[in-house]
Image 1 (cartoon, one colour):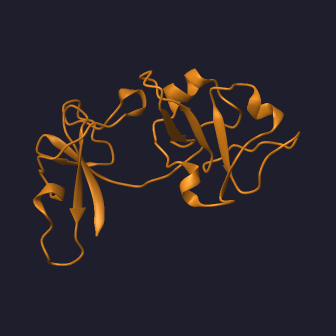
Image 2 (cartoon, rainbow, N blue to C red):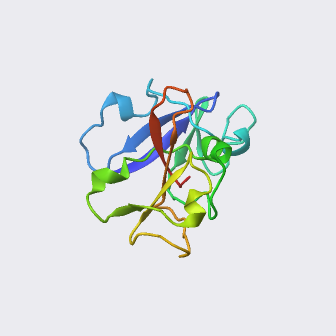
Length: 159
């Protein structure tokens, strides 16, 4: 099955499954689905028929039908501010404790203690003392929920 997206005039996206077999797909993941969701576009730039700019996508009535690829890259290489975390990390992560012992470790080095509002979990060996902290796509940040509820959220260092 190939997965495409159908982009409507407002930039919302519907997932379209294109089967490689003859069995029909469910309506909710078929072409011209009514199940669209909002996405965050870089610079609010998305393919659109209205401006004759479907780019590499194909025009389908008033929408653009596009092939998909996925990639994940780290957002931060250095310890960010809490404001930067809220603004740039948009993908949630599970609580690192859910992975079991020694999969994720809380960074306890001096550099990780510079902002008490941010806990940094790294995958692999514990970072302590003056060891070098490496932030990558496996890094998880724990911060207070921005709604002020007193709860915490976990965010993946990826986009």
